[in-house]
Length: 241
Length: 260
Image 1: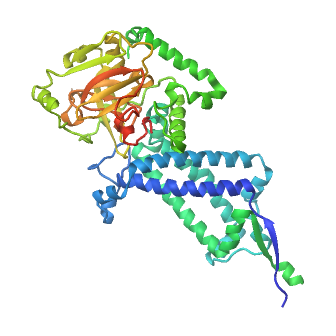
Image 2 (image 1 turned 120 degrees about the vertical axis):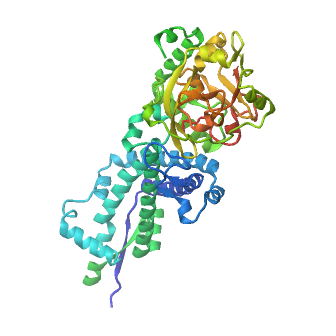
Image 3 (image 1 turned 90 degrees about the horizontal axis):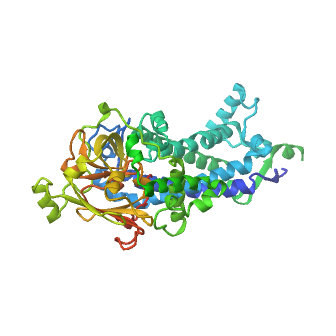
C-alpha cells in the first residue's frame, strides 16, 4: 500500500505567530487577574448602580462560595495592577497585529469567507463535519474553513473590542470623557456584567479552540503556531501514486 | 461654577490652565514627551512594565479629559437609597471623637504649605463660601457604584481663600482622621466638580460618609474620595509623606491615579 504523501506548508506568518503567543500570555493573565478582581466583589448587577445589599442578578454566594471566602481567594490589588498591565500589552499587541496585516491582501484572503463558502450547502456540510469531530484533509486543511474564519472574525472584531469598550465604560474617568458610552451600555453595572459575560464567551472560544487542536493534531498545530511549518497529508497524491 | 467665580481665579490657576493647554500642542511627541509632564504621570512611577502601564493609562485618560469637561450629573430621582458606607465609618481617633461629640463646632480645616495666606476654616466658613451641588456616580475600585447628591465648596475656592498657591506648588496633600491621607495634582484641583463636600442628599454629611467634610474628586475611583478631612497642605513634592508615593493607597500598592 502506498504511503500517504505528506508535504509542508507555511501556515502562519511570523507576525501572526508572535502576536498569537503574546495574546495567549496576556489573555491568561487578564482572565486570572479578572477573576481575582471579581472575587473581591462577587456579585453582578444590572443598570447604573449596584452594591452589597442591592438586588443582584448573580451572587457567588448562591453557588456555595461565601462573600468572605471569595474575598480571601481574591487579591484585587494584585489583580487590578496586572489586569491593567496586560490590558495594555493585549491592546498594543492587537493593534500591531491589525496594522501589520491590515495592508496585506493575503490577510483578507486568509480571513474572509468567500461567497461559495457562505452558501447554505457548504455551511451545512462544514457544520456536519465539525459535529463529527472530523478534521479537514488535503488542500482543505491548508486553509481556514468557513466556520473557523467566522469564529476568528467574531472574536477579533466583535468580542475583543467589546471587552475593551465595556472595560472603559466601568472607569470613573469615562463619566467625564464619554458618559454616552456608559449610557450606551445602560449603566456602569450593566457594562461590568456584560464584561464578565463576554469574558465567558472568550473562555468558551478558547475551550473550543483547544478541542479543535486535539481533533486536528496537537503536535502539528503547535509546531505550526511556533515554527510556522504545518504538515499536510494529501489524499489526491496518495491515490495517484 | 458661575462666570463670576471663573473670573476670580487667581493668576496661578490661569497659568496652570494655560500651561495645561499649551502642553497639548506637543502633537506627535505627546506619548514620549507627554509622559514627563506633570499631568500625565503620577508623582512616583513604579518600576517595570507596571509603571509603563500606569503612565499610559494616566496619560491617555488625561489627554481625553484635557478640556476639563464635567462628569455626568444625574437626575435627583436617581439618587441611591442606602448609599454604602465603605472603609472606615467612624475614625478611631481621640481628637475626632471629641469633635464629633461637639457636633464639629470646633472642627477646623488648616490650609497650609505653598499658599500665599495660610488659613484655618471652620465648617461655617466653608458653608459661607460659594457652593456647588452635584448629583454624581460614585464608582468603587472594587466594583460597586451608587449615585448621591453632594454639596460643598470647590477646592479651588478654598485655595483662593488662602490667597492662591505659589508657583512651585504641584500637589495637594489632604490628611484625614484615622490616619488616611491622599495626594492630588492641580489637574484635579482646578476641576469645577472637585469639592469639599459637607452635604449629602440635601442633609449634613452623615458620619459613615465622612462627616463633617469629605472630598469629591469625581473623575476618580472611590479610594481617592477622602472622608473625614483633617487638613490640607499644598506642596511641591510628595516626598516625606508616608512611604513617599503620594498617598496611602499608592503606598499600599494601588495606582496613584484612580481614573481607573
